Image 1 (cartoon, rainbow, N blue to C red):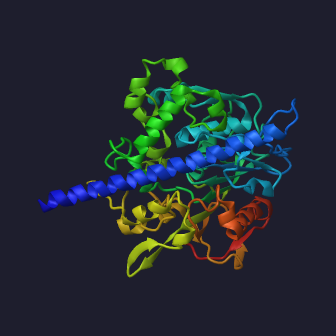
Image 2: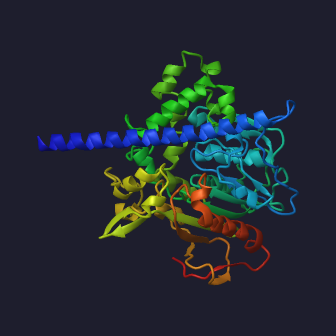
Image 3: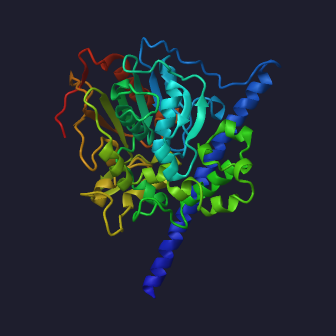
Length: 457
């Protein structure tokens, strides 16, 4: 009887947590959407009758003389032109006049986003690849870019890439695709099209968040019946099926290539989409399965750290040790969107028969920033650890070497450096100033470079 009562209480607690988190997520999303609509209405009210309401941001100056900096958003993020010109990176792109912020779909898989990023820069119709498209049951071709945002992109005119959250893995996979010459019609691509990769709170090794969100640890793909992922799955499906143009102008989950619109599948196609027997959630070709530890390990096994590229990582943490127990730190400074997640990630335990990766220990994955585990953000480490140097003090410098991950651990939550500038304030500016300084002053393939002098870990 006691076990039954205990199980019932734990179930009730889990359901209460889920309801609170769902309400917080929906409220925050509605809050951002309301701000975007109000911005458009305000501009429309004050604009001349013949004016066109746009995002109000100047185009980046790209002549190939200086490599652009490409900012790649994370899960549920968006690029330039969405949300009435609101900035996912909280205005960080204003720090340089050669910055691109692509919109890649907020819940699409790492593979599909990497393919979309290539064509966003070079131009042309997005080609997801024949084999991949056949395997996951979607159209091979997607959005067409009449003119790329950086059409001269090549080894002589490379680019810097900065990825937040899942955006970091998108960049790494894109670089591997460039090395593998994986784009039809482009036979001369190489990893050297990328000068530097900067991971900002990047999910480089997967995260226990995927399991908390509802992905089953046993297979790393299927979704539990009651979980946050199911709420997002149903909401995303309805959003794409309704296919309301003015809503899509503000925000896009990115699943057009799955043909989920009522214009394509009709009313008869909706039940199978809602049941999860068709579409991206049936095949696992969306972002959350990619964020599991086992699937990240599979991807890392095929993605290299290249010897001529410079790698930087800023790992965030909002936890500390108290009497040997991992607990949230700086509670008053944690963003409401991730507040409960900080505590959940601290106490997550992997109960599946097989560990998600070799050497996995629950205690190693307790430190987190409210969305991702800190151990996952430093550098690629599973299934094989990549070369890395821990950076503690920026004032102690030496010659910077390519092919090595230079990483820092920053006391901040997952939202500090995106959508959160007022709260990030000085810390926000320090981090982005450091990132842009690396791109503009410290990182060149033909000149001496400097960064902190630390022993390899």
